[in-house]
Length: 74
Image (cartoon, rainbow, N blue to C red; front, side, top):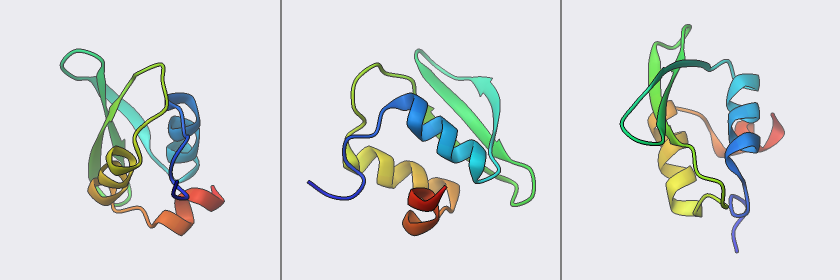
């Protein structure tokens, strides 16, 4: 298990908010679009009740332009 395994939706959203992201809009199904006004970047976050797969979280952070270390510190 890596450092990004075991995170749930609520924890991810809390950390994204701490990094400056805001909820933008609901996307298809259970997915949400989050936006960072300073960097002008968007990311899609699935709203699922279980743990987020590590690869999915890495893809979210890459799309958002957030460093893994910054995410873990937030």
